[in-house]
Image 1 (cartoon, one colour):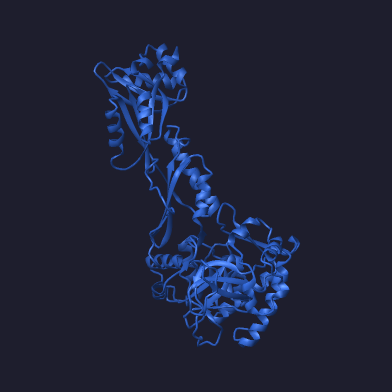
Image 2 (cartoon, rainbow over the protein chains, first blue to last red; image 1 turned 90 degrees about the vertical axis):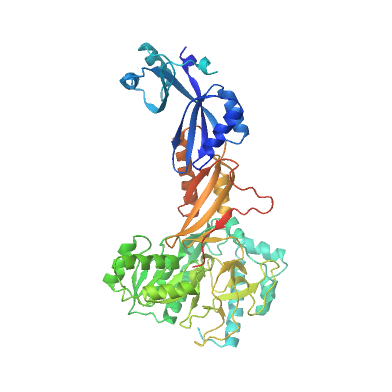
Amino acid sequence: MEKSYIVKQISIFSENRPGRLAAIAGALRDAKINIFAFSIAEADGFGVVRALVDRPEDAHRTLTDLGFRVSFTDVIGVKMRDEPGGLSDIASVLGDAGINIEYAYAYSGKDAAVLILRVDQIEDAVRQLLGHGGELLKTSLSQ
Amino acid sequence: METIRPGELADLQLKRLRWTLHQAENVGLYQRKFKEAGVSPDEIRTLDDVEKLPFTYKKELQAGYPFGLFAVPMKEIVRIHTTSGTTGKPTVVGYTRQDLDNWSELIARNMTMIGLGEDDIFQNAVNYGLFTGGLGFHYGAEKIGATVIPSATGNTRRQIEMIEDFGVTAIHCTPSYALHLAEVAESMGKTLDTLKTGIFGAEPWSESMRTELERRLGVKAFDSYGLSEMYGPGVAFECPEHNGLHIWHDCYLTEIIDPKTGERLGPGERGELVITPLVKEGLPLVRYRTGDVTRLMDEECACGRGVKIARLTGRSDDMLVIRGINVFPSQIEHVLRSLPEVGEQFMVYIDRVKHLDEMTIEVEMSRAGFSGELQDLARTQKKIAGELHNTLGLRTAVKLVEPGSLPRFEGKAKRVIDRRGAI
């Protein structure tokens, strides 16, 4: 049951230099793949572009064929109230349960804000959030 | 010995060559090589007969790793040093007690030649340890009675304080480190007045570098040449004429050859230096290909010593000298190819930053190397740098790049870009 809330994020290795994001985004555009949310994490000279897309398998294949190093990462997307305290509610549930957030990013959509979370114990996190009345993105929603 | 007459020298060389060849017959490699070449040491009756003997290559030393080329039982080996090999394993050199005496005698000879003695305070600012430059000069300097400061490398400000506080008169280091020392001393407002002599080796350096070092450090600068396979430093050295290096013919039989054909070249012609050491017990070598390019100088030296070699400027192979450490591109390749995280291509860039060499290695990520997590990439980067450090003995900056972003080569790959100017 928890599994149906685990969303596939695509993670793309990228050098930290001009034009790399344009190349990735251009490839997804040409394949008519829509990006819901994304973030960039950077280290010494390189980074990882993380994205939630409508067709992750197609995105993986498209980018791999172009020579990018791509991998899937399991994340969860949880809706949050788009008002003060929204993030705090979710973070507290996970913190109280001893679940560590490795990274997170968010987008504010039409009906709600969504927090994308990479955590160390993903199925526990799903249980905890559902148990506390949280609303999670379904895997199928992004397919 | 330094001014021995030519006829006497030739007799001595021949006697010692024949001894060396018999010593070499204790080594399996030479038993095989002499057999393959159809030559027996007893057939070597003149110095010119040395041309009948086969060359020895660095890779053969490596194939004997670790002790396969030693000509004496291990109980007679009293010291080991290593130098870079052409792939993963280093080249191991071993010394008998007599070898260590010979070596320090040669260093002492060089230091005496440039006027150093028991009144001098000598700072040996090179790596101690497996590198031959540290202990080699240490014992030679003790032999001439100098006061030796084994300062080794690093902590430049402390090095400068020692020069000032101890009244150091002579220093040995790499020329690029000497320039760094000069800069730091200037920034500290120190004039290093006691310093008179600089011995610089382990990497090639130019006449303009000499002018600069002499001006900024207030020294007379002397070039020192050696290689671990021939004990280490001490093989050849500049005299006060500063025009070429005296190579010690009583201990080293020299030839200059065309590195492509192996044919011997005449006096004055540039080619690869080939050395047969004449007094080495532990690790005798026959016609060893040094890879260093030089020429035997025609003109006699005003000091009255024997035939000199010109200052070394290049290599007949692709060996690099980075901060005084010898590095073969094949070593880098060997390390990278053994790591699953590394993809097909890599590039090596060498720059000089504040007079010190910096090596940057760009490696393409392999599929196996990417989990999607940033921290795994950082770990991969660290692992690659760590493995390179283990093999090369050198810190490098590793950059991870996207697959397909590095140049592909159709012919001979040119993966090393040396952007340093001459020093």
